Length: 392
Image 1: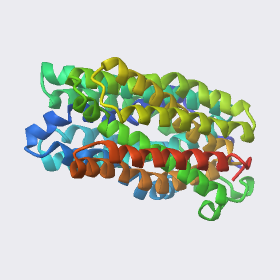
Image 2: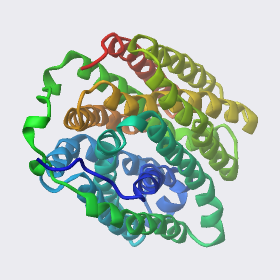
Image 3: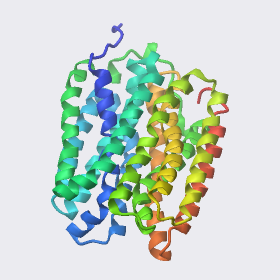
Image 4: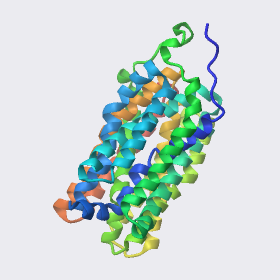
């Protein structure tokens, strides 16, 4: 019998740095979308695909990440994903086609992080699921805010390409810190199957499907807002710097919730946890309702950002936390994470495209906002239903 797996002393630091890389390469771009479009002589609305491409990767590749991790191990798969992230992030600056190709590589890399970090935490830090998930969610949201806000002044001081290079250096640092974790990598085939309970077929599980619609609909709202909130603010009369500020604060406002929600969720029963979904639904609906009115005030849009930040700061970390709380072993955690994120992100991938095309067709954001309100209803109801059972 093999000894219980250990982990590197840099595991927690590595997890936090991987969290830094999970959104910033995507969420930083919308603030300078007009600069990118001008550089490559394309319409700004056509670049909504830069948000959609990673989501399609999340959807189609998540199940393959689980299969790869079984063969080569979780830590090794994350290490491979970091290499893809470094290459993909740097090559985006050269031309339009390298921008698209690099974005695909970035999407593939972040897919690996999405699926495997909950499994690594459940496997290596089973007594710290809530606190560790909370900390890496803070890393995700805080650096999403930093990226969304700083990319505009960096672009004005130099160029958007220089700003992307600076952001890409974070991935290099993360890969260096992650290296010691590879020593403790262990493919699943080396783990005795007699010590592991049977795996659950997530694709035939009703609660897992509730989680798909919960996770998918909240991601539909989040990535649509990430892609188009700066443009909505600009249409209302805000300057580019003000719109960038709003985008940054949207991420920043979610940070306290990203830290607290996972910790609180681990201490509550499954029935009480589901009311977080209702709270998030009310906050998101209020935020979207305000966007129906084009008010030329940065304070107005900061309130919009606050309400939506509260909503997403609740829904996203709660979703990541329940992957570990609703399963009995690391294999089920990884499988649930892969299934929910695969189907959920395919649903979410349509969000930025739908909202962008509705704006182009109607020359207004109203129709897209109605669609987003419908998605809020879906994630609220699905979250309440998913909370009825303790385990999947």
